[in-house]
Image (tube, rainbow, N blue to C red; front, side, top):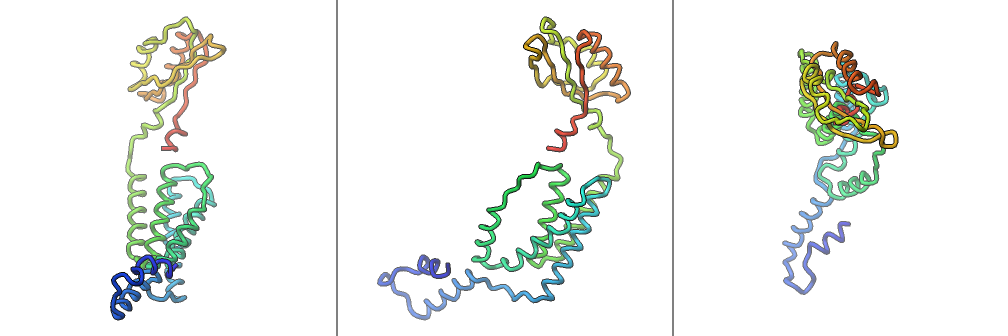
Amino acid sequence: MERIIKNIWRPAAGKNPMPARCRKEEDAVLESFIMGTGTEITMWHLAGCTAVSAGLGLSLAAVHSYKNTSSRSFLMTLILLPVIVQVVIMPVNGNLGAGVAVMGAFSLVRFRSMPGSAREITSVFTAMAIGLADGMGYLGAAAFLTAAAAGITVLFLTLPVREDRFLQKDLKITIPENLDYSGIFDDIFRQYTRNTQLVRVKTVNMGSLYELEYEVLLKEQSEEKKMLDEIRCRNGNLTVSCGRRAEREEML
């Protein structure tokens, strides 16, 4: 690789030949650019950075499990991910050839798992950032990032925040095909909900029924049954379902 880059970098022989002294300086600069000029990695340096990465990863896993349920494998991933990224980055730091090789190796990795929640994705990116900072030698920055993430997470989960997400529902109502659904439940929604939006209408049962799907924000959780009873009286006691939008929230 070094020979290829030198042939591209250096002009062809016979065209503007450069002095020997300039050629030596050019070769020195090009060699330092390709091979890197970082200091040699010692075992004590590697062990120290690895211990710091493992400790910060353990702290991140503890913060992630605060008021949250996670699998043991995911917590182990948060602990080991900073160590892995740090070990990969340390030899690459300042080395163009190794950087190209690592980039080619990581391009072969494919992630086939389902996307996790927003909190899980944030924890994974934080763990990678910690590993990058440790691998480049910025241990203080990695520790500050871990402390900042822990402080923000604990503060947000401790503050009393109104849980409106428990009042957000997916409401599905089945009505006969001869019933005009435009505004038929508006008075019920005004009484029991703060916000209502019709998101989809589709036919079911060979086109003999309509299924209306709403996104609603209830005023009070305790009045959900009263709202459903009034809807059943109006749609002829056909199917009505109401549930939380948990799956959609986790994907955002």
